[in-house]
Image 1 (cartoon, protein in one colour):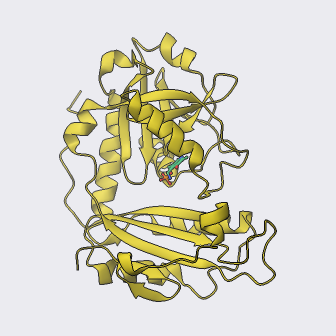
Image 2: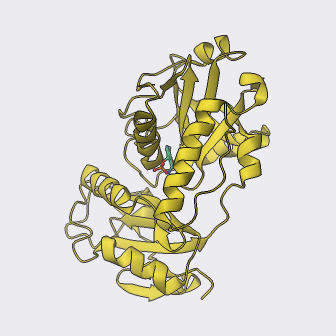
Length: 300
Ligand code: PMP
């Protein structure tokens, strides 16, 4: 096994053997939802949180009974074990299945349920120390960004644009100038020692990593405010007491050192970010049954 294996509607197959119907509504209409779960040392990280979000996404698109015959809490660990996957991720997708192409739901949908494993390298510690750069873009997505929908065209286009601009990630901005989230990540600023992030509403995805960042901050006694902020606020404090970072399942947390070509904190990851990241890396190592990695943040 090379660490890659597919579960498709009850069967385990080699990834390249998987076939989905041309009229699958996920393919034609984006009528589906997905999850990405990190795997470390063969263990699915924060699986229960991902399964809870999966249920919420399915309910939101009125496909609540799609997984009746697929117990993902058992199937996913089985898939990872069969694939012989150590470190990597699982991509899971559920669509309303195939039916003659019409917009309204088919009378008796038979959902397409699939998940596959992929071995993957995660960001190196050196990358964490260098930090990433963000490219601000207008948020042209729809009004239900809280649903983890497979309609990702807006993210595809802005992430391509970010890459072409030499940045690592796009940053979705609201028309009023507030910061929403990354192209495929949540973002946080640390302003005057307070961790700030956009509140959970229909404009952002409730990231699982976001949830754990906030939990860790509470545990460490770092003040948190789920309140939107502007790039202006970041820039006004950029030279001094300001930090910025992103969070997602496959990248954990990454310090942001420049936004739209303007350096944050002189282009160096900040101490609050590194303290949170050290704690997250310790938590992930414990979940994976591994030794705690060396701290990124030296003693004060
Ligand atoms: N926001 C968006 C738009 C995303 O696509 C993602 C990653 N799928 C996230 C946030 C981060 O979510 P998570 O921490 O659950 O990976």
